[in-house]
Image 1 (cartoon, rainbow, N blue to C red):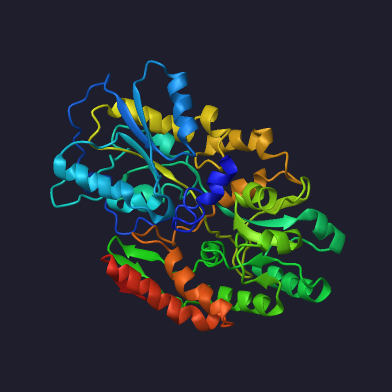
Image 2 (image 1 turned 45 degrees about the horizontal axis):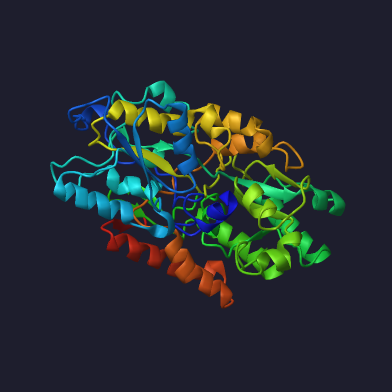
Length: 450
């Protein structure tokens, strides 16, 4: 059921809960903490019940905290967790803002939720999310999260959420097949393209990737540092798909699509697992692909699948990668028990007791080490994935912004139909950019290509 729940979430903002919309965000335009308005908590009661809203996937974790802390009074409510682009949480908070009561103390959500929860609903109002860096969570704790993983939480110089998990993109490959074919795992995108062309000639039908899922742009274009969703200020979005960082990836993929070594179908599309799952030689994708794609969906036998660190481009010394997942925990600024609420959110995101057995890769560094040490997270793979996972966790490019709208919509509504119709990615970039710009303007962003 855990697997089914995880895969069922694969649609909200590019597969929410496993994929929490564009899940990194440069805090451009943010002011320093000293210039932001100081947080003033409501009257506190350390014995007050903490109401926590959680999705069903993380319900057992909240229940585990309750069991381990029987003296803590929790009111546990299960809701959709912002899955499938739901605005339920935002709508309810807006209602509670009007009535002046009803706010949950702790909530699980997507990074997109933070874009509104960190901002006042009207001038002078208190944002829903509490600034956790203001005497709630020690800076030493915040510093232990993977590099860039908290940037979706950061606005106006403050940190408004704790990242539960991330889904850093790595290069997955079938080691058994690679060895059988005599291929070397690529370390650059140019080598990846060359190998894809070689596979098309020597082993037609085998694949080095697929671009037909609603999150494929996050695996490929995000990893290429394409400024499709780049905030240059909190209210200004830069989208420039004519950038060389976008066109180079489009050209690479167009070549491999034409050679049929990259599929325009999605890995999770109907029938793909049955027809092509056993012929996936490589897949550039998130850390959860190992268990949820190869193991659960493709049924690839244990001991075959391995992961390599993110690819670089020739001439670039450091790698950048994408991210296709990661939820957040927020504490309400209206909570009358901030101590108890913060303790719960901190335990859920940082404790080895909880995160070592979590379904996806923890954003908190020490907890990620415990997760990697868990035999459950290692036994399936042909080699130890720890190095690739840890390297990629600190290489997620923060220039792909966490916006008020999903980065999946334009890709799914404009790009994927164009690919199905036989058009190239290169030819579709202008239409994709227009669709992104229109979405951004519709939710109040200024749009620029500069």
